[in-house]
Image 1 (spheres, rainbow, N blue to C red):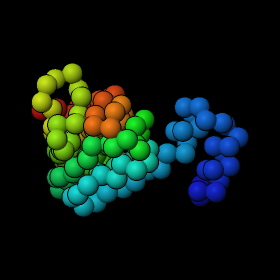
Image 2: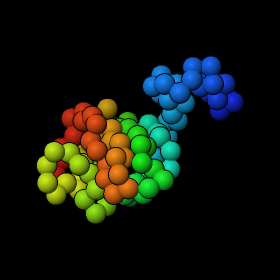
Image 3: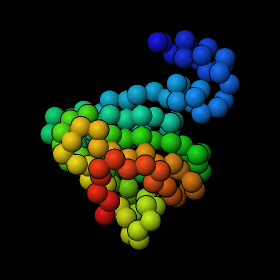
Image 4: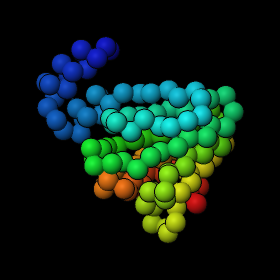
Length: 127
């Protein structure tokens, strides 16, 4: 399905959760670095070996943004939230380490300009 088809389908479905899920792109990241935060995305970490990724603070323009970040390889990928911007129910959280299993990862939502809220966790350790 190309972007035009996705836009048409989203127009037919409206702006509900299903439309948002269908319109959310899947991004494959195969190198260490920053995870893009400028749009909702389902991100697959496809790097051979452990990926070392960072997520910046959301900023005011990205409040409400949802990122799902999961490993597509059986490696213990790490995601560092700069400045301790991840709210997971524990104090001082900055790092997510995936299990050495395909499908390990998290989903976060930007709830303020400086905070990501943990929404879902599949086999990841948060420290």
